[in-house]
Image: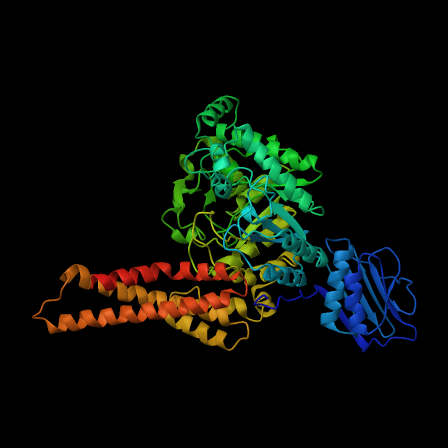
Length: 636
């Protein structure tokens, strides 16, 4: 069960009229084949029988099925509704949009009037990352229903070792989805008109695969994160995974093949030699090595009748976007940017992460680079080769330093683009809560600029962990506000901050209090959330912020007594002995408070995780302060 009640977007155009619908004699809900779910919603609302009629996406509530003059707008998921005293008609561009119309009608009621609505972005997606602690399958199914309410129409599912791979491949972990659970998940997605986009890692982020002895010889280097693109066995094991995943997703049009963050690319002897040869052919050697391999994986997907999707970061990381021309023309490229959350930023990603570039004049003005990554390393634009300066000016600075430069850069290459924002997992490797204002701002920028650039749409990512061997990110349920905001903003990119806050019942404003550094903000947030039925998790996150600050204060005081006064206090200083004992008492009380918080947090997380995963996340989030306090107590 999700924490939030995901809202239905308000229509962009409505006109109330006098009166209300009253069913005439013999009235029924006339619904086409394939839109039965929408028909059931209308039948339940009106109390009338459901009858199959027609083929076009239209529902007529009247004595007969004859359509009226109502037409749907020719826009993504467009629909129109007309409610008259003796007749209701819903017209849409497709069955999914007809479902949206029926849901809005149920929210609106039977008062007479007219409604027209449509989406600004065709693909409105969120990301379910299963590489980390395992979510409860029932939570995922409920989440799909709620996402559909706010008109999210796709989910990018990053299975990794949670997919029920065959015993022949031996890649499924003990808590992977069973075949029955996968069928239930995909069935729920189908029921709610949410397309599943499966992701198979083709190069980097393969720690789960390379941990298995039979595949370890395929590693690029001792890091055991990347497959070696020069070894035939790498393509073979990826092809086998792609085949099994595609077979399990007969209705998925898009298949994501990863390709991001191959940190070890070009390090082995074979790849180093290949990259050197490619460098003489006019391309960056590593970029060409990446593109040739990824193109082969993409063709596997195309040969199976699907469309491949690939991340973009290697292109600007290796400073050579031109290798995108080496990918099959059908390939959808996904630029991601999670830190930029304002319309204009002074910096741009260019070079191997964490390399950033900005004009030298901005170095003395930290406010000129909002959203600058915490690990970013800034270089002067003017020190780059002239051609690289021209590229960055064209995609960034000639546009008034607008954010999301690589959305525009890839658009210039004429490739299909699907952007990526972040609701979770973008504010630090081991934090307990997202930076809410930054997340909403990032989603807002992606919505508006994706529409302006003509992108297919946007996926809001929600990372469970940075890799399979790092700590879990924020709990899955903390992504819900970002997911709901994504549905609303990707549907109507002009939605204002105040309208978004109102649609989410004031939640963004309250969560913004948790972003602050002032304890009274956390106290105010905790009190406000205690009054809300959906507030338990947010109360615990506010409490976490408070305990963490008090832990740091006590730890500093304890460290003074340990390192400044030695292992034992001066026997002739009773004040010092009292202070030392007082600090020890504070540390002991904080240990007890952390243990109580951990137990309560674990119980709350069982709404979204399987029990073992809930316990693990709660233990990890409290591990460092508990370790710090216990070590100091022992030293005292």
